[in-house]
Length: 450
Image (tube, rainbow, N blue to C red; front, side):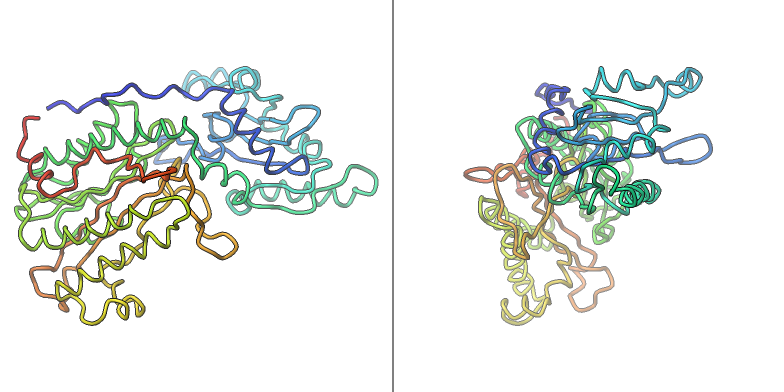
């Protein structure tokens, strides 16, 4: 069977006008008193003369679209000499023969809409002009210590000279209340990218279900998943998890080296990224294509918990409410299975359920698999609003050496995860093309020729 290609055409690429609109929206938030400084990611060495595949910093990519490493973007709304300034690597004919062409300063303006562009070695000389008259510097201190030092030293010098020149910045602010607020609410273009990523990722999961069989390895299933991503101009959005048997009880298992055994459950947590936007899907299914009675009992509890949580992904509800709904269903299920004893309310109050359900029920999703955005505002759970996308992923896990439960439950890990969009009405499940009803999973796995 060939790796499937998405049935729908991919969305149109973002344009310089799209990025300009994002910068205009940011200007409304920070005002003419603010300036944003964003560094691009750096290339990371993998081993001698080889780098890891480059992936641009999400904040930098969101605001500029510029794909090269080591750059610095400065955005100063209302600045007379141009609000959007890029500092980039210089053109280098010899390096471009080896590593690929660079845009340089001319390309930074013509292809990405920068009002001005300089080579990186001009950053410190230009910085006082870019900061002059600005009260607030918006940047993530701590992410790039050497850049922090260059900027803070410049601000300090400006403060020392402020009586004789333009005012110096008064404070540094993070990006949580500015740029990250924009990224949290997805517009229709972003949602088109996320729907496409979800469609392809769903096809990859279906492919893995149909390929799975005792005797194959975890890494072979991973290879099938990644092949679907690659055939659709995508890459993994994060390290894919393919955990068979007790490996599913390791929440961030990435070894993916074990052999599938008859009777194992397989937990796959994998999502593809399309042009900066990722999906995040988890499904759990039997290696031999049939759930045992014990596996079915636990699976149905997790599925019921997920449905209860998805029903809370609505305007004015909260992520806390989503988690509470899943936790109650799971805890009742633990009591029904004999894993816990006592009243559900008391067990939850004591945190007894955390032995078997130790993580949250969901997280923001977008350019990052754990996307930016505050979960609490003014120390209260943040109300959901249309345009937010969250994962919903309850699970139950019994460690293989947990003698507090009967042997038939030990080493069983089950998680079910979908990507869900908050709308003005019912939740939209972006990843619904992957079956999660037991009967539908078994039917798909039986149809090996599809």
